[in-house]
Image (cartoon, rainbow, N blue to C red; front, side, top):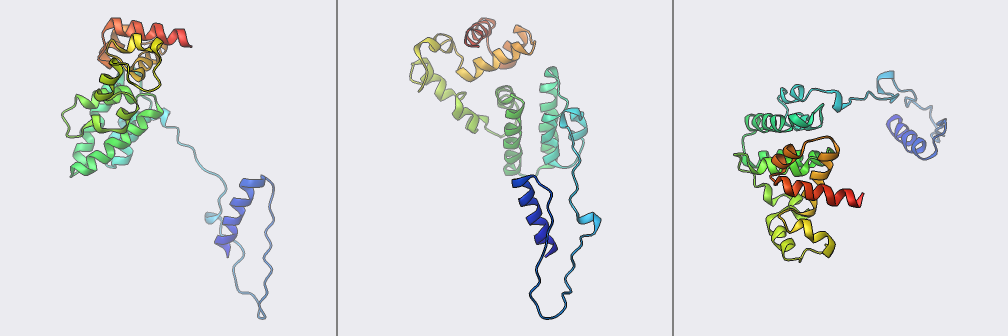
Amino acid sequence: MLARMQEYHALIYRRHKLPIRHIVIYLGKRKSTMKNKLEPPFIFSGFDIINLTEINPEQLISTQIPEMVVMALLGNLKDNQVEKVLNDIVDKLKSLTDSEESMTKYINQLLILARIRNLEIIISQKLKNMPISYDVEKDGLYLQGIEKGEKRGIEKGEKRGIKKGEERGIKKGMDKGIAKSAWMLYKKGQSIEYIATTLELTVEQVNEAIKEWEAKS
């Protein structure tokens, strides 16, 4: 009953945000022997907050728990640390996993976390060039506009939803997602040369992407 009442408390508070008094009406003939008070350790009274952006990525990478290692991508990560931290994460995952299936699972988790920090394009490009068996081109990210098959379609003007006015920059070898990533990195203060190297574009392509996205914003 105590566990059930605590569950009721959470549900009622979530809905009404009011003080709650719980009453149980006992219908038995004999005196009730049920406990009606929780010990302090079992009472929910709040929670601690761990801010991942305040944690050094190396602190997470140094653990022996793969799920914590991939979380390093959400740590106090500066733009110029992305490549090194990613290399360290992959190397550590290799040492902690014993099968290709496990490695694929954690790489998938890494790509999902990358989206939280708007790093999915950069991480995908880096993973593609790493000596690991994971085939990044089969990842769901490529279904959103960065797989090679879609790029060929874009150059033919066949990508759904692409207007003629948007095709000018895309036909030069960029898809819409990569062009937007170039613009976002530029807004964060990265140099044109750094963006070109990171996203494997030419300086001209980066300038074109920035020009187009600034016109849209």
